[in-house]
Length: 64
Image: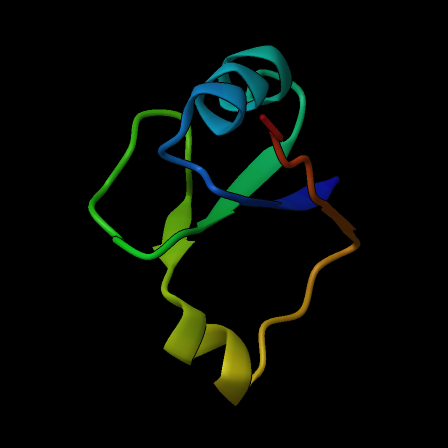
């Protein structure tokens, strides 16, 4: 499955990549877009506005 994870470089995003990358094709979305192990491509928010398609978008946000 192709999965786009927002906040890919944060704590939750990093752990989701570790948990899901063995059996899925992971794409990232964040305010920065350096390469990350286990991630096919990391998109910026500008890329998303242009159009990014995936099978499922899962967003987890931490709150304080």
